[in-house]
Amino acid sequence: MENKRSFKDKLSQYPSGASALGLGIVGLGSAWDNIQPEIGYYIFVFCIICSLVLISCYILKIIFCFDSFIDDMKDTLRGAVVTSTDMSLLVISTFVYRYEPTIGRMLWFFATIMHLIIWYTFTYYRIKLGKFLEFHFGWFVTYGGIVTVAVTANGMGFNPWARAFWWIGFISTIILIPIISARGIRLGFENKYKITIPVVAAPVNLLLAGYLSGIFEPNQTLLCLIAIAAFTATFVAWIGIFHAYRLPFVATFAAFTFPLSISVTSSIRFGKFYPSFSFLGWIQIIITTIVITYTTWRFIKFYVLKKAN
Image (cartoon, rainbow, N blue to C red; front, side, top):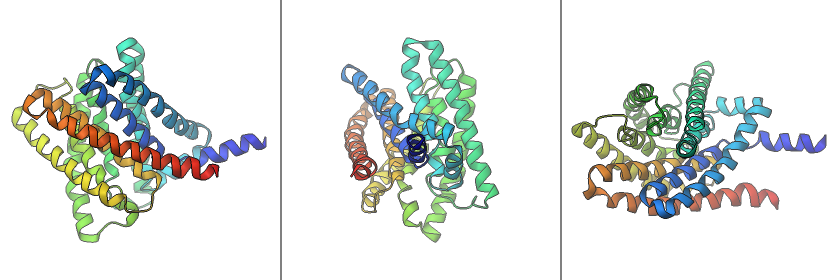
């Protein structure tokens, strides 16, 4: 009985940021699989295993420690990254689809519904608790993250649905970027929100990767505009990461791993459309691999080794 209680206590304290790290890791694996399939395949498999460990623990928290999950959703910072769990499943579904298309589609569909439920729950508590104006860039994980449906949709057989989610993400991004940026410039962000600044790279890079996923006939003007915004946001994210690492480490640091990994995917897809820009994917994947590896080590050191001692 004591062991059971101890397990539940530990599970209730499991950080939502772990799912964000899982998303960043599996996104990096997918990027390697795209840019260098010979070795990238094995990296992707390894990253899927690591991601499944991280997100499975959070799914267990949702099932067995539901009150703690709701506490996460009520928190403006922790709740914003919970959708990383289903976004990881969306990426994993593309790998499963290669070998078992039916199971891959089912996993993709389940993860899409899961994202909508978490999206609704996060929004509900922002309104109920009067915190709807506590904007920070972490909100892009929830509201812009819906575009992951489009990024992973190729071959799933739900293209009209995926295109609709892409446009929802596009509109959300257009609305949120100026509002959140203006708030940050006018009022400044508390330290706990400053670490979310690198997340600004996520929505526009998701839009770029989703636009080039095969569910659209790309318009070159729109494509170039999104690409310029994506590359600019990625540069801002790199600067934000440099400043974030000067702050005390917390689990939500993991939130900026996925923006970097999806920026690699978007650059790779853009490079295939415009081969003269293919070098960007290599530059970004090297930087991203270093950052995610370092963040993973910091996470293990802080949450595993420290508590073990």
